Image 1: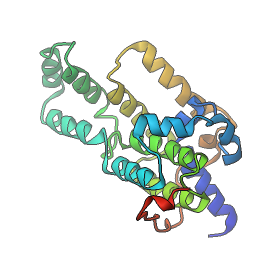
Image 2 (image 1 turned 180 degrees about the horizontal axis):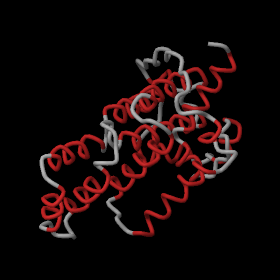
Image 3 (image 1 turned 180 degrees about the vertical axis):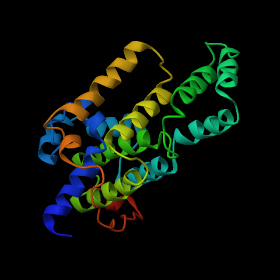
Length: 231
């Protein structure tokens, strides 16, 4: 693959994290230099949210997200509901107390399960991870080559799991709602505004880069034996 195509593939992989990059003030098209100032809080965010303080900590986080953090629960509920008719699903949902966490999980799964491909809400984990990969480099935990490896390993998962950027966006929004357990219209509108910007703005990488882009084979991921490898 030539350098131009490789660069586009990396831009595509970075753009998977577009919702959180935009939310944190990073401008299109999410070049590293432009992200540095926008993500000045990256190190504290990684520490406070995920207890990531080193390269090995970050590798552990990536493995957790690739294994699935919220998607397994969604898929389990999806399987449970899949044997019911639509009327039975609605009746089951109505039988649950609305102040019960189970209601929120079932409601969100019921709302999206027929609109999503088999990958379900994996886009939520992969989208967040693309954002945190950029945060890890800004924080100095990984270098450019390591960032590229993480991004491409993440990208191949998403590329073959969704059909296009809108498909990915719906799965991402479903995952965010499933995670937040916030079914309010206000929360949905906030999420939708970020996604709409990515889908419609002419300067958005989601508009510039075709979903079915050719991705190179990802290089091997870094292995960390001790904390001396922290950058």
